[in-house]
Amino acid sequence: MCYQTIRCGFLKAGRKRPKTETGRNRTQATGIWLVADEGVIVEGNKLSNQTLALILKYQITEETDNLIYSRMAAREKNDRNKRILSRIADDEKDHAAIWGRYTGRQVRPDRLRVFWYYLMSLLFGYTFVIKLMEKNEYTADKAYQDLAVEIPEAARIIADEETHE
Image (tube, rainbow, N blue to C red; front, side, top):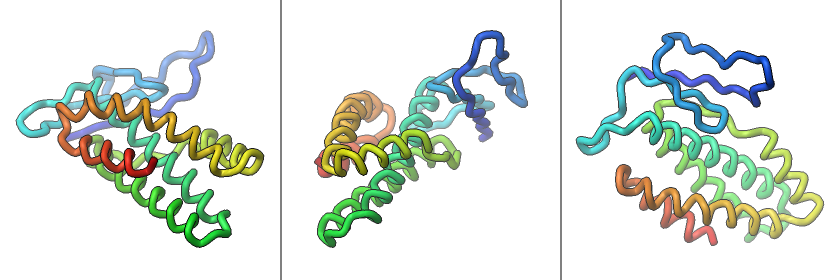
């Protein structure tokens, strides 16, 4: 099974889209081009390129959230809160690993988003940032429920996300 991804920034007017090595079907999903030579088969069903692109987006989000929670935990002075933030960061890392099994990729976190949330935690406190991230997780939970039909492990991720709240 061969998957190739090309991460591209915002395309400016006049710039060409990035070309893939194989030149095969490309699917755009929030700045990521996914090229599949063959699909991933989950419980007898082949996942579409669109589903794989969505999973890749979730994987990047989980890696980013892991880094954000880890940085907040490192800065926290209260031991109890530090343990809670570290546990949430570990859960996010596990979720990224689950999605990684389907994409077959190692992804990098969105550094700009990490910096933004870290800056907001310095200015407004980590409670504000956690509430904001919970709001984003709520919208992700709805999408995970749709994905749970194709991928059974998505149900476990939904349950973990609900315990974070």
